Length: 176
Image (cartoon, rainbow, N blue to C red; front, side):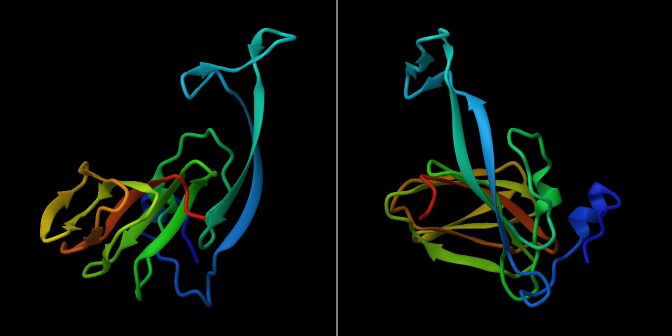
């Protein structure tokens, strides 16, 4: 069970195996004003104001993290899902255009070298230290580091530190 008494306690909590806490999927609707998209202004000609656009988002919630309405400022660390058997994942936001998620590693865990066809990925290290795995080499990482992996570029992550490693992952477009 997740301790939500403080953000630190929440971040320190661990969601156990799939049997105890499998992923749930919720559909939420987001209304927003679209002012600039692809360098063009989109206006409602009747009101000369930016047109409202409704996006349907599937927000995968791992463990017992709450659903989120966007835009909402959050501390991603409060939504991390750590697993003892493999890298933990949590999706913070998803649309057809982008997916924002968390990859959470216990010491020694790894996300093996892989590449994506038709998709770019950005990793931003939030906590911990380890290695970015790249084709033919490894690069050290720590909190604050950023890696951009364009389409087809092999990349991965290994937690070589003594503590947990938390990485924000942004994929565009979102995986199918």
